[in-house]
Length: 101
Image (cartoon, rainbow, N blue to C red; front, side, top):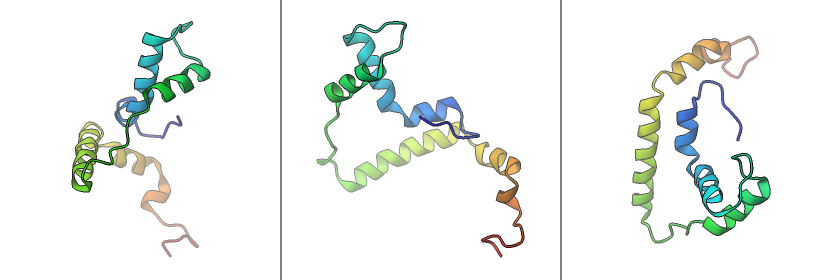
């Protein structure tokens, strides 16, 4: 998983629930050496724990679930955008020949 400047670990974890579940399943169901499952073990965990697609959920229900997750992440990272914007000069000023011209 790539890291994004200004996005903290809690935010990444909130949106990376599948990865966390795979690691937990591997630790409880496979022989894990040195505390971390191997890529092959993670592939096994992925196949064993693949969730059913939410085809039975209504579109509105899915959107509501995504809104709740987004609101939770935003509330814990309120100042991320402001911080990143302050460090990224292209976010606040346009240079000659830029898309904003």
